[in-house]
Image (cartoon, rainbow, N blue to C red; front, side, top):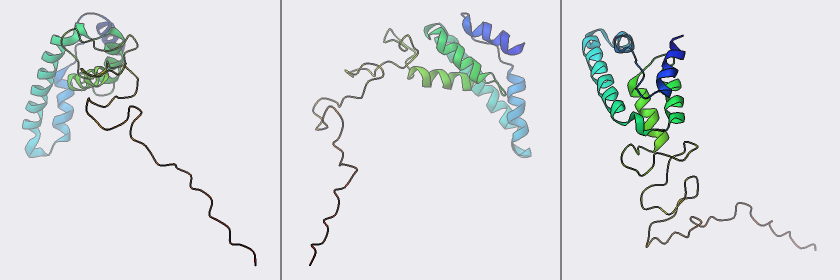
Length: 151
């Protein structure tokens, strides 16, 4: 039921609600005894920072990417940090402006200044000596060795 509730939020216009205390108790339990208090506080700080960043960019991310990342980040150990990381990876970190967060299929858009369409091969920067198809590669198969002449 929790996964279904989180999924509804992912498709909606607000960031899913993840319980920071539960998430960060895991970090606290996994830390050395002398580091447990610091591990918990650090986790809460990181999760709150990620939640704030998510709220700023959530509506600019295509719903299909939001849904996919929410599914991944809210599994066994729900985390805003994991959700933000997934969204950054899926969109190429393009959270601002109208540069496009991705193609309709959810693939990252081409980097600014690139003449490559999304999903195409990279093009070298102007003035580069690399040919458009990439660097030349030597053939992988070698020619057969000559056979000795019969006597």
